[in-house]
Image (cartoon, rainbow, N blue to C red; front, side):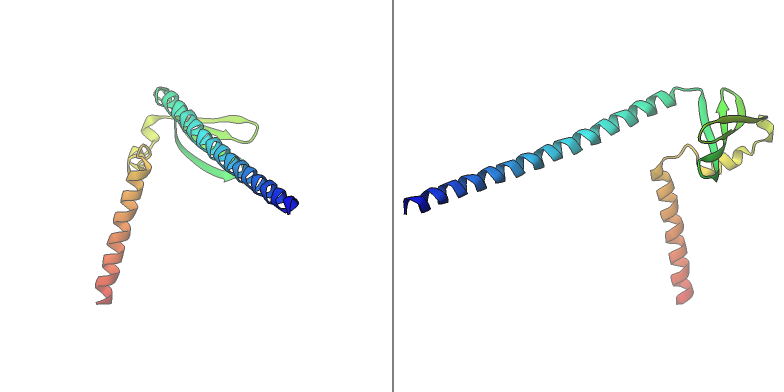
Length: 137
């Protein structure tokens, strides 16, 4: 009888210790995820502040294949076309400001944020849905 009581006490203490270990591991995982989240946000904000103060800006980029892009960049008041691949960056051509279609940049909303693009998409979608519902009537 004494052995049964001792085994019951040992089993309950082992179960309690296991529950505490699981709780400790869960809290530790949550702390790691929260730390990673805030660290990535900090690094992103740090990169954004350094790029806003820069005289260089990527205006457009077109993918030509895996890890190959053609980029139009503005450095100061000059516009330069470069080719970028995995290992190299190649100067292609300098483009004069007169040859660029600036209305295209403005219509694409290159400097707009995601919220602006989402708002425009929602307006277009709403207009298309209202046109379809009017045609169905």
